[in-house]
Image (cartoon, rainbow, N blue to C red; front, side, top):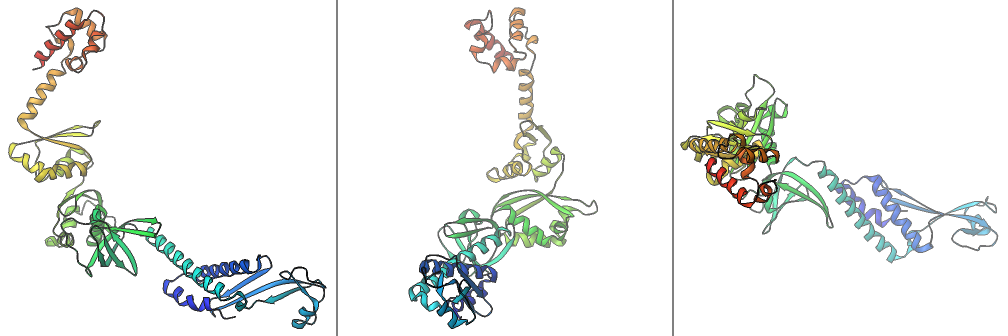
Length: 413
């Protein structure tokens, strides 16, 4: 039996590369649904679909009886023998169902249902395909530009690049060829939303992988990256082969490799530095082009004080604080830049505050003993405490607490 439905959608299926077995199951489900609507059951029906020939066969199984009580499941011997003379009472009879008996309305409904199901399958296939391609660079054509979003046509699939994923200083035109990285694939009420990006650090990493074969081969690793799209990027690389210079390989002969990346990113500045497992060395390199005199690290708080000469401070901070900001992000340390004289003053203050309370000659032995028993071991401990904390100690009233505070404040100055 040739079916309008198979003819109508077999071409569409070939174009969309939908699995034939999957389509076969969909068509079977739709015809069984039609059977359910017409006969009230599908228990004694079978549906066979041949996608190669575009044929559908529907069989209705009936039991041969003398008198029919249920025409859906039973048939008389006389009628059955017209098709097969050798049949007897109690035998099973297979009746071929003509689709025209379903009526034009059911056929149209089935075709619409099939079209909708194919669209749903197509969306699921797109979602599954691109979910496995996150992190891959694509090259598409800009189809539409809205106020915030750019829609890109790639291999007959629509991709979207939101405002947040665009490079701020770039100008885009409809019909323009554009490269971006697949950042995310989300399922929405309208189907899959494929988010691409030119602003994400991943895009820059993928460009380096394309331009620098040693990265793809695993000889050079991109350890960490800090990026302000369209402005500046710091990228830390490491060579697993001592014979190969990681920075030199990324720059390329006469700067050809890095120039290709910079051109793709609309002249974004890129600083490439050698990664090092020693925080002090790595932080010093990250602050380039500035050259710190001293790096003081607080590992517990992940904070750093970079001490620089006066002429290096502005380089370390950078325009609008950009160099310090990117260096902090690259190293994962909160970096504070200060001058040499500021550092000395800070150290003197810090040293004074950290003096043991026992060295405060201006306090009586009795008061010092009480403070020690209360857990106040240094000048800092007392100055950082509230008045209430001090008055809670035995023998220290409000006036005494205020006097202690004032005395120690004078000593720390």
